[in-house]
Image (cartoon, rainbow, N blue to C red; front, side, top):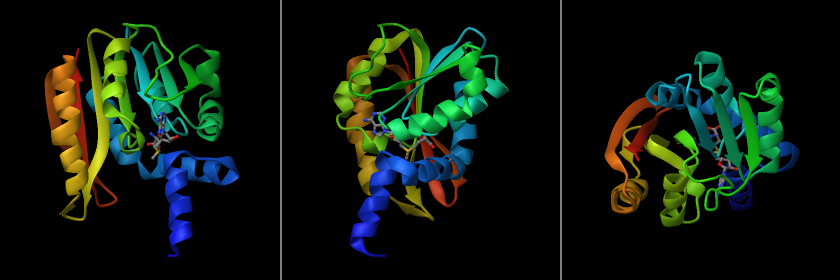
Length: 205
Ligand SMILES: C[S@@+](CC[C@H](N)C(=O)[O-])C[C@H]1O[C@@H](n2cnc3c(N)ncnc32)[C@H](O)[C@@H]1O
């Protein structure tokens, strides 16, 4: 494939834009179903939870979360206006009932009060975050005491490990989480999704 086309596709995965972005948002929602279901299982959302998804894309995980649990409300944050159009469309009735809300913003500067959410999660978005240190500090700030975080991503494909991503987890994300004060930090291997090895990093405030 031509290099310029690859770059355009990568750009759409990073921040979906325009009509093509609507298509990519839907494509990602389909592609990430397995890891989305796994993430929701680990999150174990309950009636009194107020949850935040970072990089919510087209809002598939939020729709599933609300449909499959008694969660009070899930807020989705994304940088992409295009992704948020799809997310709001997909969750029209949940928005109406007050169980879903979508906000445009950057993970590095979360537009929320301190100690607000009981659970924060993210699926296949961490690769695109600009600075991990500031973002993890923001996540810690908006989490309630005893609140938890689940970050899902892929660290390899078809038996091959992505050493760059694994190093990012073991040398950056996990040490940053420890330093900021997260407790019970744990990394778990998940199901294969289209040959991609899924992994989560979890922790509690
Ligand atoms: C690969 S998509 C995954 C979307 C969705 N979680 C899913 O699984 O279908 C990555 C998403 O993260 C969002 N994103 C990337 N960088 C971001 C940032 N700095 N702040 C907020 N959202 C961001 C993108 O706009 C995009 O919707």
